[in-house]
Amino acid sequence: MPRWILNLLFFVPFVVSLRAQGGLLGELEKAEAQLRPEKEKVYETFFGTRLINGHSVETPVSRSLQFIIAHRFGRVNSGFFQFFGLDQASVRFGLEYGILDRLCVGFGRSTFRGTWDGFLKGRILEQQKGRGAIPLSLTFLAGVAMDGRRRLYTDGRQEVFSDRMSYYYQALVARKFGKVFSLQLMPALVHQNLVKTTKDPNLLFVMGGGTRIRITPSFAILAEYYYRVGDNPSAPWRNPVALGVDINTGGHVFQIHLTNAQAMFETGFLRMTTGDILRGDVHLGFNITRSFGFPPKKRESKRKL
Image (tube, rainbow, N blue to C red; front, top):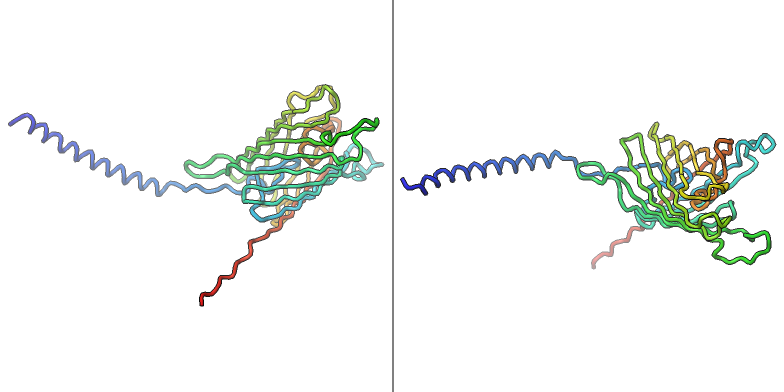
């Protein structure tokens, strides 16, 4: 028998076997794909848009408005005659509006130096679960603040409007681990046009970190810390730190906390915190967030005659 016939008789069963194996592997891949969990968004990395002093990765949903009242009493170690800080107060009223589900704008007014502040916040990535899902959430934040005092200088020097301005740019990177633990990193660049001395840098890098431990579906423990990198070591400024609890009641998010920062806007607490934790320079404070929804109006369909 010719050799080419023998080769053909050997090759044909080999090809048939490969096709059978390929069909079997294809069926197995289809079955595995059906069992594979689909990508699903992870919700409530944090209860609200604020961690404690700073922002969280959360943004208001589209066409919703959030009204935030932030309050800081005086220092607890101020003594009985100031009722342990309760006789003093610093307040910020803020509004945050969801332009889109992942984009919002906010404004605020603080009694701390009469400051007006505004920001734009956009969520770039949303954490998912499932095979091939996005493992974390990423939000970018940019804001500006204006010192609203009548006079910045007490020695009669000439003032220009730019002396009142400060700016910040921040990235918020967070991940929710299961149902209990959430972690967030918060690197920021803060620029202050008018600094106290020539040794103080105008542009400062700050590295922040925060966490949430969920105790019940509506109650959690919060912590937050920021480290100023390359700041003037002889300046009176301190690294902001805060510890508190988070209570979610549905339409409200209520936070109670202790912090060494009195300012409640980024360029304030990141650069102008003077409280020394080791000396008991702690402020009792709270944040109250109330959400309002504005659903789109339904258009009446026109009847065809």
